[in-house]
Image: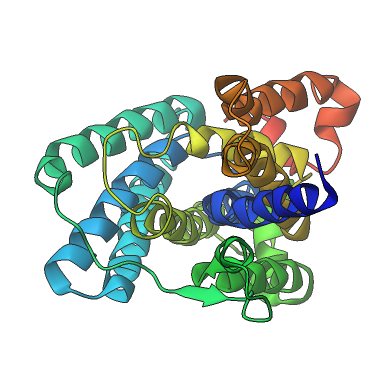
Length: 306
């Protein structure tokens, strides 16, 4: 390939990493906050699908993409709140409840969203970073989701908040030692419910990004397992918000390789490249399967049977 073709391919991968990685960013940040409190939410796939449907429906009915984004976040928070409340009951498993939540969210989305498959809703606006170039392909590659800067700012805010605020200290205490949190007079269940709910709202923004930006429509196979992949992504990021940002771009770049190759006229092996995010997830799970590596950085309460 010529140097110009390589440059176009690189730009396509970078632009695709941002587009594909934006939902990963929000969902992983939401799960990072949830797990920091000592709770795991495997129902993120259901949260993602349901919030994508709710956001699309809200934007379609109201005529405003931003109202759709808000409704997506609220919908994600509502499902996550249900998860938090159920997991606070005695002898209720986080894992089993998360699987049930995934099925509930997906089922509700498919049932309520049947009428939304054909219509078109207002889209989240783009931010053009390629105005310096007169080449359409460059301008298209550097046109980013307006939610992406919000996700980056949120990663930095979450990193700062967990390390430097009272709320962050309480969340980390509930995740590392519930006995210590109770000894200081805090309700561990209340802290975990709050963290799970806020995490669900953040994950819901990822659902809005799917249905209102890329691919920008609603259908039943919209998420393609991104909610479940985000759980592995948080482990890969070692429960650090800024690392979640980098990991989201890595996964987004893996998902963008196939379309980027097609954009420069290379169509061979498309399906193989489209499987890269899932192969990367399996690789991460294999690499982190040893007790020493998997425990490093994890909230201690995640390893306890509750």
